[in-house]
Length: 274
Image (cartoon, rainbow, N blue to C red):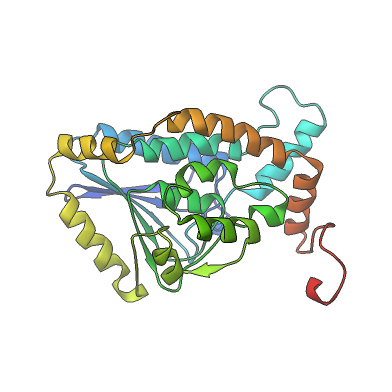
């Protein structure tokens, strides 16, 4: 377990690159409120540091990010059901929109280094980054529907990346796919071997620091132009939708079943239940 005094996001800076490492391996780098708060703070600090030209989001342990912290989610929904004061039952996903917007709108290039599995909200981080490099062996899944919730918040960053047919298949089934398929459908920029992952990330960072800081920020603005609502407006609406599902009876059952390592009640009886 990680003690209260230990940071869940480590920061290393050098040669124009700030590497923000998710360091909560005890829960597979789950998106807890604390980890997201520290990640936002680290992003803000790197933005204010003129020596930083590129930000890399990396991870310790075998898992990049397992998605929302379901232990914290279960505790928060229980408090909400008991009539906790406003904010007392806040689920982690309600904060995820702030993190994704910060990465999406970030004025400096953001590179995701994905050396292992990513699930649900973790895919939102990958998609929000400008460039994402993964190991071929890394696995991905939009597992929300299997928990009785919807991939609402992450859709704001994921759907602009994915091909429509792949999005429909993978968001509806929750099936697992590997790094090579992630590259083919646009979720990641490049899938490479585990042995060359760091070398590939370094090569992209080396290319990015050659660009003028103002020109890079302006180019990101062009890439992220939206015809209607801003990403923050969209994320606010989607966050409310996601929170509603997490706090629903079906969502509570899905999270409880996952933590108890059993099928949720809606899965039909039969051989496939396994």
